[in-house]
Image (cartoon, rainbow, N blue to C red):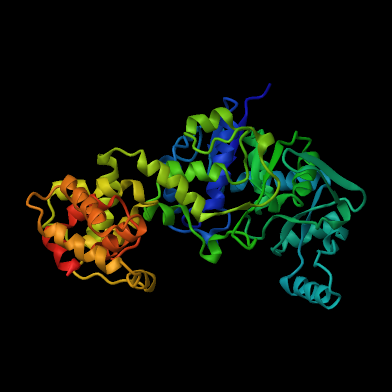
Length: 474
């Protein structure tokens, strides 16, 4: 039995968006769940889209997400080089081999001729397909054109009858009529391969056993299979993943400004939480477990449990998962996460370590990502508080002013400023006024913090300090 080998093959075009990261994760889990290898291959044949530093972004992201690369541009391996621009001569050799076997041909059509064909297709309201014009050229004509220096591409010669079928692990049997398959370009006029062709050559030579990718490639996979067939090679197994969509059904996309991994990371989402959440986008475990370590995902991941319907990206669910991980952090790690956000917004020079420890201890269980701490604790750094309309309306409730007045009286009589004495002041306010529940706690919270909800009220008031609390109550 062959060793399982999967590959993550991104283009170096910038930060990794979450769809790409989800693909990388599933590729990683398919390999590691079966004791296999996870390969990183950089697909940079489209040099116009290359972004300086993008390869390092990819490495940094995989490292911080705890995905170990077995072979790649930096790691090396027995199947390198692992960057496509360093393999160009290889693709030319295999494209020419297909020409010799009669499965491909040289095409000298000018861009003007192709544009005319496109315009004619538009007029007829049909999809553009190359008409195979250069298939008719004799060997002598081809040689003469090449000798004369005419630019050319190499196209795959597609069968025009029958169907090409394959079994996808997620979507089942997929069949495409061959007459719908265009004679696709394999080698461009600049000598670089197209995405489809380079993929087939590299996957074969790197002994990839499972190709995991988005379902937008479902209908183009027969082109890949016909290439494998033309070379006489065994094709890998295919696992096509459902799209990740936003609420409303639109596909999530980096081009539409949707979050990249670094966007989330820079907002204080934890990599392990992001990975945990992405694993649940399109995959459903057999039980109801929702929080997974990477080791647990490797152990429990089963490709048969991948859904074929779109996965909805729900920021609320991500926040829930991330909050779970934040709650589990040690105080030291929690400080590392949130202090940089606080330093960007506030002057902490006058705040003692004891103050910050107490502040963060109060809020650790009340935020869903690191940056959220900034707004949550604003009441401790601003002298003035402002109430929203809902808070203002609540403060007009009959009995609210009575609660605030009595609590102010109780606070003034506290001689030792402790959480226990503040709790006692709240209890005494309840007994004196007869107010309880919302009518007790809400007016006190609004008057002292400006907020209708928050963490433990006595702890919050204690941290604000007696002088500040009395000023706000007045």
